[in-house]
Length: 170
Image (cartoon, rainbow, N blue to C red):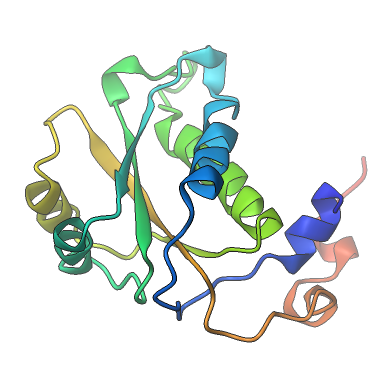
């Protein structure tokens, strides 16, 4: 499948089966994160992979993970991030999002569902997973086998703004 075909096939999955994600597939998803670019190659992102029942329960106390069998907590270490010198913007959120997108596309390519979650209580998550102080959770990626029907690959023509609204040429 081409990258564009994979992107069109990907959708936010909010219902999962109890089927366990195979270790080989999980490792490929994590490898996709590993090769993702970060600003100035600073690599300030850390991943906390949660698979145990206790860990998933801890994550579930901070966010709805929709019954996913794997939750990847994408964290940033702001002390290691590149900062734009003109205005002080720190790129950790961008770096974390790029890694998350690489993982979502790879999960789709491997026949898995995913949803990117930013609606979570960070204090509850930090405490529940006993995260070190230097790690700030940016998002949670829920992964697993979808219990939903596959999304229509051509839905974007109706669910997205028109290309001429999205793109400007100068």
